[in-house]
Length: 378
Image (tube, rainbow, N blue to C red; front, side, top):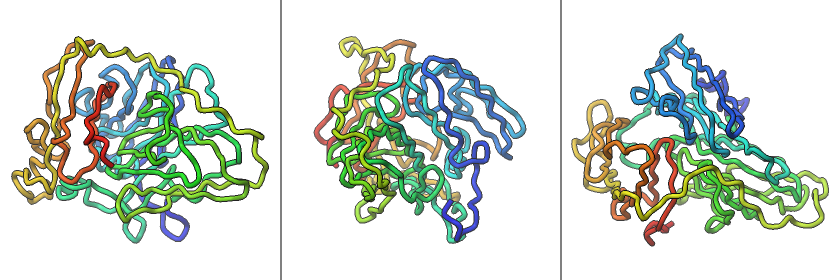
């Protein structure tokens, strides 16, 4: 993972690989995936971002029983949406995901889209010891109350990144997947102007991000159209500068010495084909208000540090404490299938000291109806 000067890192993986094999599916085509558990612990597989039957969602104790050691489970679904997704466990998630169990899942559009080629970056964050082994301490309560388990080593597609070979004049579809437990990333492409064309698997209007900085929270995916406008035989840095005073060079765009593939730049990037998502009717939608509060510096912590390293009631949703790190509880009553809802994220409810918050609703997508000015900070 970190080079020949270090021993191999002991990991957990799908098919013995980190990341797991990239699964390429066809939009609207049924798929059948058999998962065999050769671990010494229970596991599941969650198909992150895919709209599928609840029984296939892979959440331990909620949508399926565990896949026990030596057993197997068959997942069957038909992906309705094209885009960039990924898969990972939802059993002992911190440990299994944090030790390497994740892979990219790409659902291809029904018809080819206009790029010279595509590149996938599955970006992971690891906390390694000096012997290149993964450090213990998953689920540390103090970290959970702050910024989470941020590591000290970042990899692309399972190895320390060196350089991404490119050619002048080509247009690349760069699929970015943040597979980290907690690290937020903000990528700047030196001398280049990324255009975002999809977020979390769903196409959007092509746009340049603010300051040409592509921000990815944990589990996020962003598809970027990147025109290689650099000079042949030159290198350009890709920098992650999300955390103050901790900027580092993630990798380089390394141009070969050949002449540009085309004499003139391409026209503006076109939108990807939209997925078959229903348009919301806000006039009839039921409205809910969500306030996420808490964090180490909020003064709301209750219960203190426990002997096992956990912090109880560290974060709150609408004033209700999350009793235990990693627990699941019902925020809202069950919603009838097909009912439309409008949820408001209250700006004053952001955890103390946290510039970003995000919500994860399994197998649901929505649209941002309006944004409070404070939500644009940073």
